Image 1 (cartoon, rainbow, N blue to C red):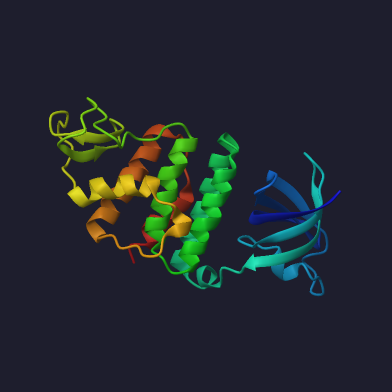
Image 2 (image 1 turned 135 degrees about the vertical axis):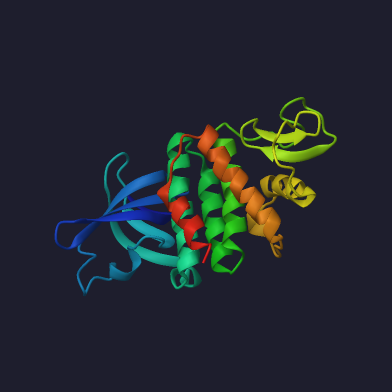
Length: 243
């Protein structure tokens, strides 16, 4: 049947001499495989709209659990600011890869929403590291390993929280802390805000460099400890952000 489906192309691969097979994360059907016949020819109307990071409405002959056939694409956002900036496109590529991995473990529509809203904010020139960290933290909920952010992960106390521990699994109070470095009080407050904030409603975002570094390091270590996910794209993002 012919369907109009909103989604984003998360990866592509050549098929034959002139076509592509696309993996599209959609709001309606989740991850689907789509054949774009002839899209690599110069005259094809699909040539410019079948690349990775294309976000739009896809008209296709939908086949459940099989390759669907692409007919037409209406682009909703070109993400031009992302595509012309190596740092932005690096973060976007990481978020796409991470979203696919998380969705395969927990096919929840909210994952799609978070990805799209995050990419829109990055395209609108919000700090890509902050947006990425917010999404990383929220995704931990879908992976079933959300850190403890409403009290001490060691004893449950809600007072005298002094640091974050990826090993223990969240906040630590002064009594439970052993040798973990004490972090900025702003970081302690911010990471909880990261979890509850609605990305689509963010209008202003200012975080000091110390807190950004501490939150990013905590999340990197936490993903290593609890998720089993290893994404080379995050290593590349961290490296390129140093320059």
